[in-house]
Length: 143
Image (cartoon, rainbow, N blue to C red; front, side, top):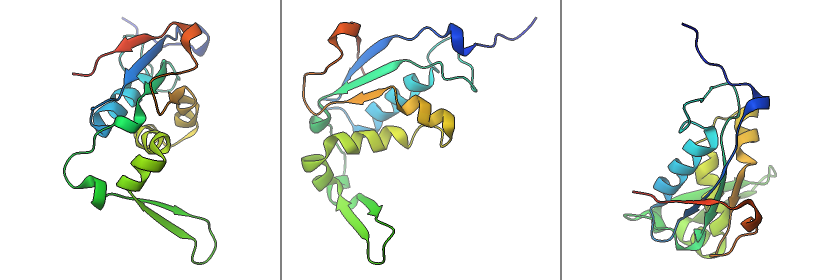
């Protein structure tokens, strides 16, 4: 019996929508990363980008549990002396909800070329509307 190996030419990709309204950030990000990698498919192959396209809506309404709004920090550095910028999760949620969601998902993907390729199939929107209606995405319910 031989193992099945997916080829990149034969990958069948679908479009899915995840509504992040009142859902924990980690739960939404974990589900999105799982589907971007293609691990929900029986044809999953680790070295091939066989995942689907994911659209996340209502990123501004995502929920953070515990004291994360005030304790969780996001760091950026400009690579110049004194160029460290720190933001709390509260500031990120109010001003940059899309970036907060993208960072959470990106951190759960592989940190190599394959992960960067998977990350390009993620689309995050602050509100209800998105630009991919023509692809007829299927809604995903988080449990």
